[in-house]
Image (cartoon, rainbow, N blue to C red; front, side):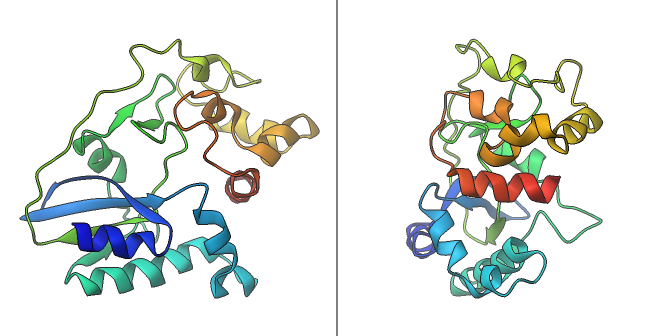
Length: 201
């Protein structure tokens, strides 16, 4: 595990949690924010102007890292079918279902995201933690200016808002509900948040 963690760190990636899977261990990998964004924006994938730059970068980097530990890279994109990253995240004991239904990480809050996962044959003991939500006032639940989380997740209302002039703040700085989470609140750079919001737009 330490060898892979060091290899991930060279690309400003971190293990976000791990769980038993298919006779070995599945390690979920995400950006080490705010340090990740400058690394990605200097990559050939970002600079070539072609679509899906972040997915292409993730495929190249994680596939290479998986080979160094005789493992296998698995990605949340490229489907259907899609791999059950939400379920895997909950199985790590490091992610929890937030009041708005999105995954919340014990250290990264609502801004945790997956670049992929690496399966290794080793059995690694889980390192579960406690959910930050029970002791929180849940500002995420009321932060959306159009109430997109009042009854489940109203994707249509969310998209209509961010595609309007009134939604500029959500585009430029990231989802207000995610930003309201006190855990990891200042980790994601505005430019990175804008990149993801425009991809969702």
